[in-house]
Image (cartoon, rainbow, N blue to C red; front, side, top):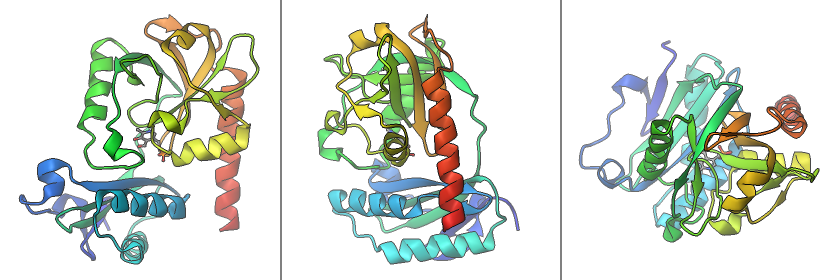
Length: 264
Ligand SMILES: Cc1ncc(COP(=O)(O)O)c(C=O)c1O
């Protein structure tokens, strides 16, 4: 079997041969929902959480979606595929296309630099992981044009939010606590963020652009990168890279994954 397999409307095919109709609103307007769940040696991590968020995203978009069918697709796909370290990408479009695809893991560096990019969340899409991701992708490219690895999204009013595909955690100089911007600021309810909050005792804190000058350490968190240290923001190096709380969060998250997979 080739590494990259997909299941399209219930039929397993090589991912490169999966086709969606050119008329599908998922393609034409980004009208649809998606999830990316991690595979550790072929085993799904936090799949129930991803499926639940997919259902909730679909409900908000008024998109018909049967979770049992999506779950069955993913189970069939995994049975047909090699047990790799990677990810399963699942998408369901307003045109009714159901696609799940196995992707090999793209190696993330241990640390990265960020540049702030002005961004205003689309309120009507609150809590939705929709296929309309061009703004997030563009923010990353704009940051790269400024010489950084990725973007840190900041609203026109100066609220620090998240990165285009990950959550933001930080500690302030002279303060032992770990913080993350609040969901009330219309960021994604990231599954890794939920776990890191529980594992580290971090708390939500309204975060402003001014806070960035007071950072001691910071990291990004997501399904694909787990915990990734941030070394600089807008060219200003953070004092601690990686900081002790970042190293601890990474270790706790890794142990949590191992534990949860062992218990499954
Ligand atoms: C905007 C945004 N924030 C955060 C995340 C991290 O979410 P998760 O931990 O569920 O992968 C993602 C993932 O793609 C994202 O797109």
